Image 1 (cartoon, rainbow, N blue to C red):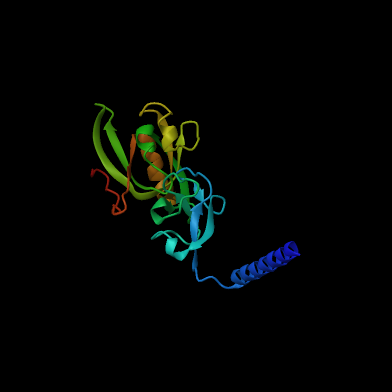
Image 2 (cartoon, helix red, strand yellow):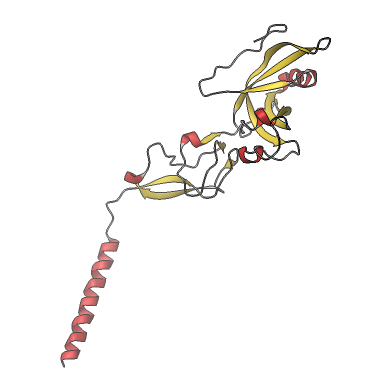
Length: 222
């Protein structure tokens, strides 16, 4: 008899507990959730960012870090190596120059060395500086800015493979050839092509506050 009462009491307690839990789970939570962008796969600098390596997760709004992105951005590249599980912040991304190309845009490869190519990433902007040499004396005559604020499309090894900061350290000496692909207007393509064949090209990377320089006139150096 006593054991039967114990079983009845236990069954009633379980039923009450289950009912209480169901009611609690059905009631709306006071916690406000906010979507935030997270990296879902380790990603190299310069890689395209989209739904294949980014995702939205909902976390308590109070836990969202300041300035963390809350929507998956479109038309951007990774400005630095990204790791799975990281929140995404504006400084981690850069615009993809090929996302909205103009009809007269052309991609041109500029031969450089690892000393300069290893510091560049797709999405960077560079000034193209041409150095002329006097063929009679082999001395440098002048340098001038051909183009300013030109977007970098891709950085490649001499074998045509994408170059990252890690592979740059393993590809050879600082003088090893490399190629930087630039997005240039068709009107500027002949000037750049002629400069490539006439003398060495130097690419100067823009910083965020860098101003766009007008091309220097012929015979005027900067």
